[in-house]
Amino acid sequence: MCAKKTIIIDYFSQMQKIIISFIAFIISASLFAQNIDYAKTVINKLSSEEFKGRGFVENGDKIAANFIKSQLDSIGIKSLNTNFFQKFELPINTIQGEVNLSLEKTKINLGTDYLISPNAASSSGKYKVKTIKLSKISKYAKKDFSEKFLYINNDINTKESKKLYRELIYTNSFNARGFINPVDKPTHRQSMVVDSFTVLNIRKDLILNIPKYINIDFKNTFYENYQTQNVLGYIQGEVDSFIVFTAHYDHLGKQGNTATFYGANDNASGCSMLLNLADYLTKKEKPHYSIAFMFFSAEEAGLVGSAYYVNNSIFDLQKIKFLFNLDMVGTGEKGIRIVNSTIFTEEYDLLVKINDKENYLKQILKRGEAANSDHHPFYAKGVPAYFIFTTGGSSEYHNVYDKPEKLSLFAFENLLLLLSDFIDEYR
Ligand SMILES: [Zn+2]
Image (tube, rainbow, N blue to C red; front, side, top):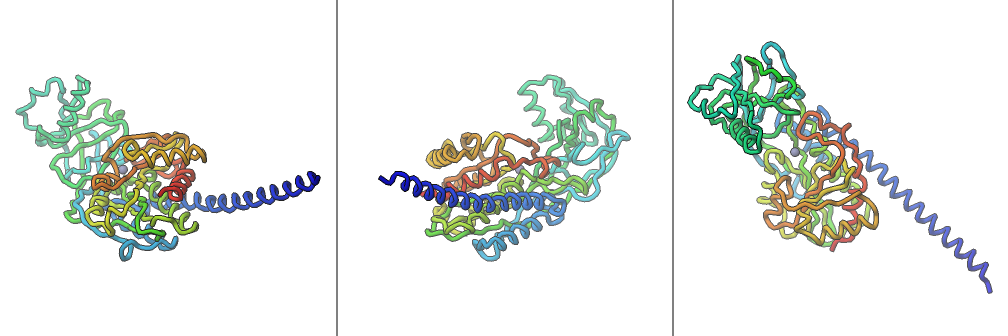
């Protein structure tokens, strides 16, 4: 018997296997080592001061769109239409230039101390502040507050009173000049309308004593038809139907000269994921399905870019086999959560199967439908679509602190690998 020889041969073939898999490991690791650097570069770039918060002031959206287009070009991604851009218009209100607010004689800082409601019209002057109690609200029904800022003291503090409070300051049924609204951390949003009153969202600890008067000075600029653009690319697959990846690249822009909303997590992280995935996939063999990459604008104004896309799709929406929207994927200490996963269970099961095998993410949490990001206009038109976001880590949201250094990118590589494996296995 040649037992010994067999063992030697086995030993060599084992060694060969080990060497081959080691080389494969080195190649894939270096492929990815390069990618995580690229992921950070993209997030840092999109979240830098140069990009003006990727909103509708100082051409932030256009700077970002051009950057994404140039990245797609250099990765070797083809344009879905001509020149990658799909232009559309929307109305938008902005507050640009010098902004000043003093509580009595103390000047406070825009962005960190306070933010002005995004729907505000220009305001300039000294205004008295009147405190009124929510419990006594009916008493003030006929008073003239048109030249006053109101501070409504919610002395009832129930769920219902909180709702009433919000209604009062957002609908301004008192016809006040404005409101002082105490908040833990000033947050922002986009507005497509202008109102004649102003809500000042001021950090609570700065107004422990409500000021007797304020001095305020800022100007709004309202664009009736601001032109912005989606950015659309794809990789040709074996068949003419698509797996689509979407991410909004716009954020909240700037308020005044000094408050920049960097939007590192929301959603430079998702854009980086799409660009990294595009880069990764072009280095692999041709995929079965064609893969589209859609970077939407004006998500923050109310899913405007994706809604425009579904009504002006480059190809028949029925060709979308499945869609993944990635919005806020810069953390992942606790894994990911998937909107619509309780509806499209087959795809959820496949993701979990891959994850169980490869141990990519801590957990893949379920969630039902929610109209909270760009997957929704597609889903509403019958396209099977998920919205994935990471959980755990930084919770900075719609404020001036959503910066690259807050992001751990804990699940970034592994989420990319999970999506890539899904593309390979999904039929
Ligand atoms: Zn957002």
